[in-house]
Amino acid sequence: MSAQLTLSREDIVRLCERVEGAQTHAYSIRKLTDEYPQMSIADGYAVQLELLRRFKAKGHRLVGWKAGLTSRAKMRQMGVNVPSIGFLTDRMARPENSQIKTSDLVHPRVECEVAFVLKEELEGPNCTVADVLAATDYVLPAVEIIDSRFSGFKFDLPSVIADNGSSARFVGGGRARKVDDLDLRTLGVVMEKNGEIVGMGASAAVLGHPAEAVAMLVNILSELGERLPAGSFVMSGGITEAVAVKPGDSVIARFQELGSVSMRFIE
Ligand code: 0L1
Ligand code: MG
Image (cartoon, rainbow, N blue to C red; front, side):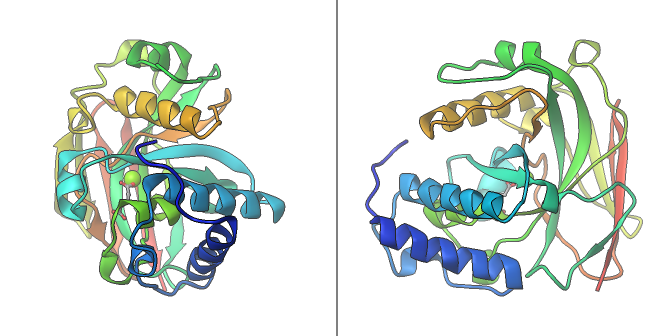
């Protein structure tokens, strides 16, 4: 971790309650560093892990993790220069072709990602692309619905990490494919909203190779004392910029070789 903890246990719990309230009741808050300007990335992860602990205590099941801010387009869009990770639970998963409610979200945005499902555990440090590919059962196309709880999507890295990397919902779909059958760097993606193309890119936009983002995620997890068990669902990061959605919008993400994922947003 790039910096040490500066927050006390009481501050971590207090900030976690603030983020949890905003996530649960869909309201926006100011970035946490407005009150704690010295907050470090390590502090952000301490708040995120406290949030995970509380969700698990309420019966939410951890199903995987996501890498975030892994493309130049996303980093530029959000004004940060280091990737991040966040956790995924069963409560965030939505089926393909489903209607996704927006009334329990603040200001949702969608992004296309390659998802990995593991057949073997992965543990850092020093996890590599080769380790990730060897441990992967299959990949599939996914759409992440992110929803920063910070007003106007304005935040910095410690704040967004504490907010679980803006994680909100995710949809996996299309065709599951073995990694040996694909060139994971060159997969083209087109995202359409209401029949219009709103984003396109190639999977190499994610740190040069989506498995690189998964290796990065495993190495961050190791610094947090965690690992990825077999069966984990891992999203490797948005290939293009995230696009805002509102009730009535239909989104379809078309992935070369992997098929498509679609959903509709309702009130
Ligand atoms: O998955 C992501 O890349 C989201 C990271 C958090 C930044 C954002 O809210 O866009
Ligand atoms: Mg994402």
